Structures are given as C-alpha cells and as structure tokens.
Amino acid sequence: MKNKFLIVNKIDNVATAISDLKCKEEFNGVVLQNDIKSGHKFALKDIKKDEFVIKYGEVIGAAASDIKEGEWVHTHNTQGVRGRGDNCNNSMLKDALKLSYENAKNKEQKDEYVKQEKIILKGYRREDGKFGLRNKVLIIPSVVCANKVVENIARACPEAVYVTHQHGCSQLDFDAEQTRMLIAGNCSNPNVYAALIVGLGCESISSNSVKELSLSLTPYKDVRAINIQELGGITNTTNEGIKIVKQMLENASNCKLSDGDFSDIVLGTECGGSDAYSGLSANPSLGCLSDYVVANNGAVILAETTELIGAENILARRAINDEVKQKIYEKIYGFEENVKNSGSDIRGANPSPGNIAGGLTSIEEKSLGCVYKAGTSKVVDVIDYAMPVTKKGLTFMDTPGNDIEQLSAMVAGGANIVVFTTGRGTPTGSPITPTIKLSTNNFCAKNMADVIDLNAGEIIDGNKSKEDIKDELIELIKQISEGKLTKAEINKQNDFSVWRLATTC
Image (cartoon, rainbow, N blue to C red; front, side, top):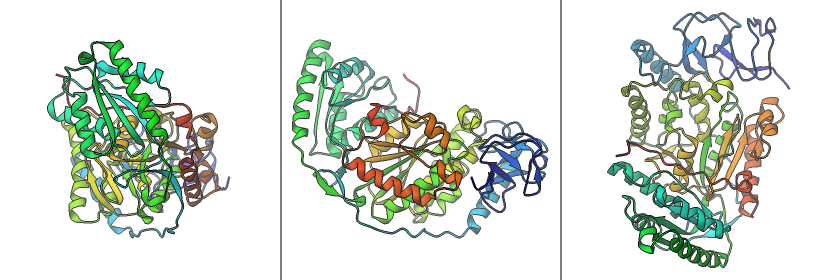
C-alpha cells in the first residue's frame, strides 16, 4: 500500500483513511485526535461550527460543532445541508450552493480521450436493430394477484425467467401508467425474445393493456397476455401459460447469434451498498467505461436522482444544451423539494445505515461519489422513469436511489448490460439484463466473493488504475456476450420493484 490516506482535491479540508489509523499518529503534519477507521475522514485543519466540510473540492456538509485538526469527521459532528425538512439555515444552504457552483464553474471541463476500437460482441439482433446480449423468455404479472400463477409456470419452465411485484391495481391513474410502462418496458428489452404477461382480469393494469403498450414499443416481438378469471382459475391458467412458454422457449432456441460491438451497448450504471471508496475506486472506473461506450457510439444511463443532490452543478455543466441543463436542475431540485415539502428529511434515510458505517456522512458526499459513474461525456437527454433511451451518448433517467426500483427502470429503458458498484456488497441482479458487480474495496471482494464479479479495490492499494479496471470490464462484457454468466445470473437473482408515486386507493 503506497499511502494510508487520500486527499481528493487540493482545497479539501478532510482526508479519507484507506487503512485503520491510530490516535496520535501523524500524517502530513496532522496529529490524529481519534482512531480513524478505514473509509472514514479526519480534519486537515480546524473547522469552526457552521463552516463547510469540503471533499472532492465540493461541499459535503457543515460542521455541527467545532472540529479540531486531526479529529474524526462524521455524522456526530457534521450535518448535510441538502434535502432537509427542518428549519435549516437558508443562508447556509444558499452559501453551499454558491460555493458548489463556483467550484464547478472554475473547474476546467474536458472530455477525456478515449480510444475507439472495434471489439466484436455476440448477441441477438432484433428487427428494430437493437441488440440483446441474452435471449430470454420472460413471465411477468400485470398485478400482484397473479404472482402465484407466474411462479407456477416458471417452476414448470425453468429455462424461462420471471419476476413478481406487489402492484398493478388500486393505483391512481398517473401512478398506474408508470407501473404499466415499467412492466411493458421490461418485456420490450432487447435481451427478451418473448414475454408472457399474466393478469387476474379485474385489475386496473390489465395484462392486455401491458401487452398493447409493449407491442407499441417492439411490434415484432412475441408478447402474449392471459387472465386467471377468463381461463377459469389457477390450474387452467397455469396449464395454458406452460403451453405458451414452452413454445416461446422452442422458438427462442432457433435464434441465431449475430455480431455486434460497443455501439450496440446500452449501459446501465448503478451503485448500491456504497461506502467511502465508491467515489474513489469503483465509480471512477465505471466512469471510464461510460466514456468508452459513448466514444464508441453506444448509450449510457445515469439514474438515482436522489443521489445527485449536491452534484447537480457538475452534471448540469456537461449538458449538451440549455434545455437539457434546465431539465437536470428541474429533476434534481424537484426531488429535493418533494422531500422538504413533505416535512421529512433525507438525513437518516440516505445515506443508509450501511453507507454511514462505510464512512459516508451526508447525501452530498454520496452524490459527489455517485456522479463519477457517468464519466466526463456530455449529457444528451433527460428522461422520466422507465422510459426508453432513444439517443446515443449519456442519458439521465429520473429514478429514486432505491437499488431495485432504479435497476428495473434502466432495464425498462433498454439497458442490455448493467455495471453495479458496491462497497458493502449486495446480491441484486436483473433476471433479464446481466448485472456485473464491481466492488470498491478488497474486503468486500473477499467477503462477498459469491456475488462480486470484479474488484476495483486494488486502485486503493495503488496496484491498479481506473483505466485497468475499465479494461477488465470491457473484457468481461465481451465474455458475457459469448455466454459467460455473471454472479447474479449464477445466483438466479430475479429482482424487480416498482417506484410508487402515490398512495394505494
């Protein structure tokens, strides 16, 4: 290990420990006042109460009390100033936004040079030109009442994949429409050859309405709908579903592999179970891959609106035009205002307890590490939850930070591969889209070996660079296209969740 701590930006007033440090140890003339756990921060100078705590050259919060040089900096003496429903000092919030804006404005923005190269991928060319890295038959309910039948059909057809969910009825119209779009989008993903939608028959989101929406997106696809009430009960519906799915599987087996390349990639980017290393190792590595995909005329999805609060200026200055810039601000500020107007508070919900244990102190710190996933390329579009990605380049999709809700939405948007960075470790994976798990640290890679595909922890050790990890990701995606299974696929993860916008009625 080359060093025991990291200072990300020259104007930072905190450093991050990359190994456990002991009280009274001295680093760069700073004597530690406490034991500092790996991933946690210590003050590089005295920070007075209400002064800003700076990391990444940006505001990650304000001191809740006087902090001495060398003292542990965390939730006990630092508080975020964003997304708060209490009477947070408005002048403090304005000053934080101003400083963040000035820092962003003063940073030189340049797209990193990325070598374009032709790497052949194997997959399934769909009639609309889209490219699937998998050729799945999907069984999915339109409503919670059909979950058991979906499971029955899936047990009899193990080569198919399935998901269940808790929604599909008693939803307000705008909420129901978003749920319908999410289900239909998953059916229309290029990794799906065919889909069977199972409904009850009296629900507000009928299986037929989902089928119609899916076919409007991909009219060439074999998408069918059946209903329990119309077919006369569970047994009849299960038997009919098994017959349909077995025929779909037979037809899918006759599909021939085609050649593709990274211009066919729609890369979903995600981080979950984050720690203080997320913004130092795995997310910058994923950012390099994002830039590579864009340079090779592919598409990238950045999501997790909640986890961009405090990093919106960084993203907005990369907007391709003023319209896109305005949409970025509207989505991020709108999410924050919804939280504040509810009288609630992001603090305590995000960062999560696991994030905090891993060294993340505030939503701002988490966001500033999160945005690295998007690399340095221009933002070409802003789209709503689960809507299709229609442009090459980097697209920002408005989603919550919840791992599975946003994963399901990116798959609905067309992601044919997902890279999911994690510092604490999580088994989450889509049954439709291969989900690569990239750990931020060595302990996670070893401790969660049956869920982690690649380890970016060696960046912290100084043994590898973010470009090295990017190259490993490229090679792994190539291998996945040739049939290699991700750990999530081996573990048969079939995670799917709906972002609810309103109460059940």
